[in-house]
Image 1 (cartoon, rainbow, N blue to C red):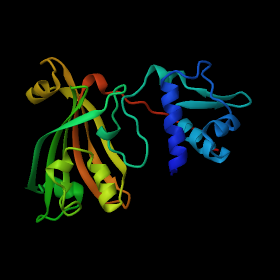
Image 2: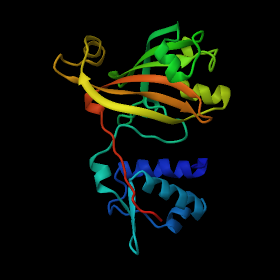
Image 3: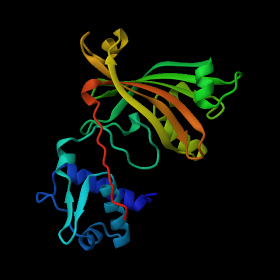
Image 4: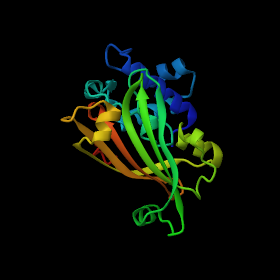
Length: 242
């Protein structure tokens, strides 16, 4: 787990890397970073380890820590930081701040499929929430989520227009820490074309899956339809057994 201080260092270093502040593509050593951020070397080490785990930097024995050039060439629009794993909350386009439009909010009986996915009874109800995410007035994401009412009984349309994951953490002190997602692409529907400004021949990215609370409880079944231009993910594989 990354503590709040090292998290701050991770965030700042990442922003500096993306801004091109390190012309030599080499990070200062741990001692320099420790003095720079006025934190302990162990905190700096945790922060740099986190960047290495994400494939943003790599270490070369005897030479130092360097920025991964492939990361700079293939920057993803998704930036996961902190504990909550909200996909749309982690989406970023440049310096733009996301805005949400609530398209639909209603309470429905859990379907057999939702009962299975969310471990619900036939008598349980869920929120059905559909939101449109925009960046600088550009519509990019259509998100439809299903959340058991018994987990968040006071979830209002006003709250649903913002970050539900942050609300969950504030109200119940719980976080979404695990997820299972499938990622694909398919022909856009008429609704996709209308809401995301797509032509009839343009596809849409689809991310579907389940999010789990830190105690293992299934929290949300989500279906995200994403403008295809932003469907980019980076992954980093480390086969080092040390």
